[in-house]
Image (spheres, rainbow over the protein chains, first blue to last red):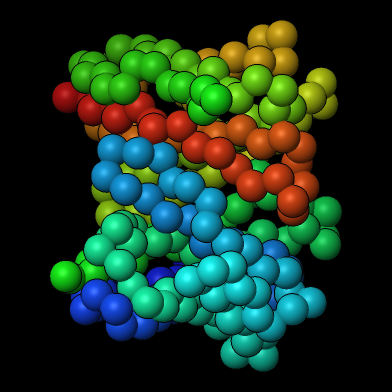
Length: 116
Length: 115
């Protein structure tokens, strides 16, 4: 049973437009959420995170929104650039319950393609 | 500076053989993690080490899998009597400390193919 779900395996967006990547989770104990970006043949790199005490975190072109009641988070990239083309993984953990970031639960990823 | 280094980058082995995968974390990082990514799947947690504490082995899929971290630095993941379902990309990550403010830094992984 997947605890972190990314239901869209792929997304295609035009350069300059907004990319919205979605993630749903089932475990109400999760209190910390992260997005990682992965290029082919490379390891994932940390992009942005959000704690459950917040509903929004912004870093440049990247914003993560958290809706705890819906157990849903999303990553917005605006404006999208061709270099943003990669696989984006949503991840979650239950830090507050003694969990650790080492026990991150990852989704299956969404492949974003930004077309020039 | 140097990131997390993993070797080999690719490994092809015959079913039933043992394999060792190596990870050199970022210098000074006290926490080290192993994940694997099977085809079409997300990253699956295997094991992590934090300083001198006993490792959390809760993600290891079977007793054929084991890992060591010698001297608090380099780690080796060993898979005994490999099976075809072990084929995956094995990713190592390290972080400065094991808390929210220390994101994981991943290596480029070892792609293991069991024939």
